[in-house]
Structures are given as structure tokens and as C-alpha cells.
Image (cartoon, rainbow, N blue to C red; front, side, top):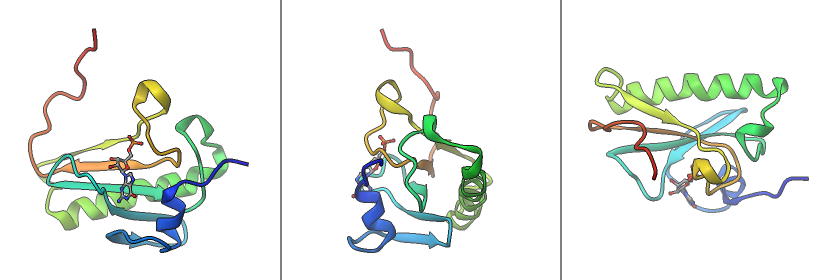
Length: 118
Ligand code: 5GP
């Protein structure tokens, strides 16, 4: 069994979060430490710890995460200028919360996606 994270409590509304969207498959809420004017996290309602754990049976939830991202980008008014969708995986990816989440960030030019680490 994988261990629940704080995101499961947000899904169940046991702790506060600025939830923008929720349905039977996914939940979207504002990041507590936004890195851009728009910074939303979109997560599956069932626990998948990392991108490495995604199975074919998760495809419906993963697809919903993408369509909800497009809807929320439109609602945030950033669709036309553009934005970035990011999913970090494990240590090298900088993952901090082990319940997969897609970051939707935008509202300003975001610069190059990667800067090479020495
Ligand atoms: P990661 O580094 O795992 O890709 O991103 C985790 C994200 O979750 C971070 O951007 C962090 O600010 C956000 N986060 C962590 N704990 C909470 C929380 O309790 N509430 C909300 N809304 N965001 C959180």
C-alpha cells in the first residue's frame, strides 16, 4: 500500500485548499506557494505515487487531468498566451509530494523550460 499524502486530505476536504474543480476522477486546486500568477495543481482522486506508477487503468483519470487543465487555462485567461504543464518524478525531477500532480503554470512568460545543472 502506498502512503497517503496531504493531497488525499485536500481531495476529501479535510484540510483547506482553494479547490477550483472536482469530479469523480480528478481534483484541481491552487498551489500554496505559487511560482507564477496562475499556478494550479491537478491530481487524480486515487493515489498514484509517481509517474513511474501510472498504469493503463489510470488512463481515464490522466486524460481527464489534461482536459481539466485546458478548461482551467481558458477560465484563467491564459490559454491564448500559453502556459506550461509539468509533472515532476522522483528525486531528480524534484518531486516533493508523492501523489502525482500536474502543475498548470502561466500568466507571464515562463522562460526556458530547463537550465542545465552543472
Ligand atoms: P512537486 O515538487 O512535488 O512537483 O510539487 C509539489 C507542490 O505542492 C509544490 O508546488 C507545493 O507548493 C505544493 N503543495 C505542497 N503542500 C501543499 C498544500 O498543503 N496545499 C497546496 N495547495 N499546495 C501544496
